[in-house]
Amino acid sequence: MPRSIQVSDEVHQAIDRDAKRRESDSDVIARWARNLGLLDSIGTSTPIEVQQDRHIRRSPRRVDGFHLFGQHYVVDKWWKLFAKVAEILVNRHPDKQSLLLRSTHVGQNSGNFRDAKEIPRTRLFFEATQSAASMLEETETLLRIFGYDPKKEMTVQEHLARRPGVE
Image 1: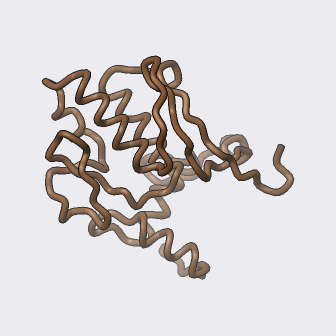
Image 2: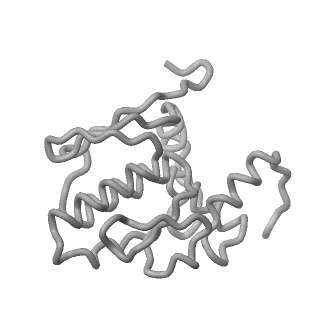
């Protein structure tokens, strides 16, 4: 049974920024919860141990650059990280550019996005208005789509904001 909840203006703005086309506020919150491991794919809660384990983390705030395939790149925005990694992958695999479309945040029509950015050297666009965590997750997903292990191939340099009381 649906319930109403009150959220701050800041949270509501975050929901609006992250909403995909035709996605309700409830859909956005459910997607966030699934990404954090708080819900499974059908919407039921996962055990509390998983919730606690995943929440005791630092949240990324600002990116300074990254290393990928032995090269260092300087970026100052999370969306630029995604764009640069996508560009690098297309340069390495020019015949596999269509693999980018497997990402839920990439499309051929810029009108489908609130803040569309073009992936360099392609005619593909992606949604740049996403949280840092979402952009990092999508970047790692791109690497997996192209057959790479992001934990082995990429290192991100970021400034972290610590949550009060978290080491």
